[in-house]
Length: 176
Image (tube, rainbow, N blue to C red; front, side, top):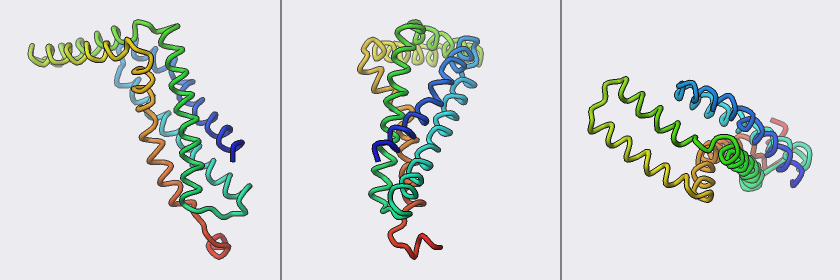
């Protein structure tokens, strides 16, 4: 199981990491929505490796049989490896290449609100929220927690669905 978890977790983790650069470049050019769409799309695509990993374990190491619990265990471990890689990559990128990320993000949010005709109250609220985010980003542990929460919910849902789809308790079920 260890080989499956590490292999598919690493593959799953690499996909969103590779898009960090493109996503950041889009955001830097003012395309925050495109950046977010790209980011979450790649997280969803990378979660497909959870399904493939569970299936590979079932077929190659478990004689075509797997319970929901075992499938969930394999899937959640793949998800954890992937999410951990995502967090580590973001922390490296943030501290070494994008230390002004939160400032740029805040500026883009305020500009978009102004361009859309937001009221001063809405602008004040957005600036207050941006200050809260900046304070969170002053601590590497809170950055790690926030970053982990980007891919993990998607990975958890994909793990549950994959486990339900791939579970097989008997040879009879495997033949169907």
